[in-house]
Length: 312
Image (tube, rainbow, N blue to C red; front, side, top):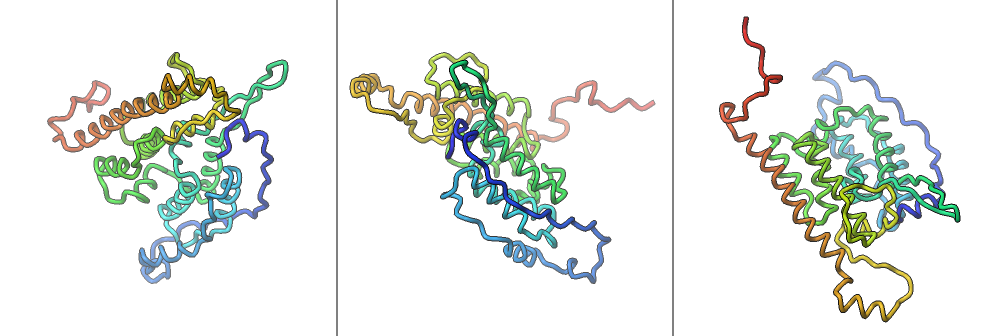
C-alpha cells in the first residue's frame, strides 16, 4: 500500500465515465408485474451478472479506487432492492480494502500534513481514508441510498435483534489486530449500536497511539497529531505486521537494538494495547445484549427529559 506521504506525489488518472442512468421512481406494487415475481434467488442471479472484480492485490490504492468507480458506472442496478444494491457496492469496497472500517474510522489512511523544503513549509495531504469515503458516498448517492444504518443491517444481518447483530459483527472481524478492532467499532457505529461517545473516544485514542509508536516516541500526550509522517509504519502496526525502518544497515546499532530487544518494542505495545481495545468492545457488546435481555421493569429509569408527560 502507498503511504500517505506518497499519495500526493502520484498522478491520479481520472476515468471518463458516463453518468449512470437515473433510477425510476418506484411504482405501486402489482402482483402481475415481472419485478413482483422475481424471487430472492433470481435477484441474486441478476446481481451476479455485474462486472467481475479485478485482482485488487496487484493494484495500488489509487488504482483500486479507479477500478471501483469503473465497476460502479458499468453496473446496471435495475431490478435490485436498495439493500442488495448497498451490499454489492459495499462488498466491492471491502474486497479492495479488506480493513474498510479502519479506513472509514481514519485509524489508517488519514489526512496528514507534509513538511517540505528548506523553509519547512506545510502542505496538506489528502489521505486514502478521505478518498475512499468520498467515492463510497458518490456511489451510494448515485443510487439514492439513504438510511445507511437500516440498509447495512438488512444487507448483512437481516432479521437479527440488536444483540444478535452486535455479536455477529464481532464474529465478522476476527484477528485481534487493531485494524480488525477498528472494523468492529466502525461497523457497530454504522449500525447505530453501542455507546457512540465511547466508540469515538476509543478510535481517537487508537489513532494517537499508533502515530506515537510509529514515530518511536516514548511519550504519549493523549492527543492526536495530523502529521502522521510514518504512515506505512502505522498501517503495519494496525495490521499486526512487522515494522521495518528501512535504509542502510548500521550493524553496531542493530547489535545494540537486539541486545535491548527493541526490534519488536512497537509490536509488543500494539499487542498489549489491542487487549485493552478488545475489553472496550466486549463491554460495548455486553451492554447491548444485556439491555436487550432486560425486562422493561429492570431497565434503567428514564431521565426527566425522557419520561412521558403525566396525564392531566
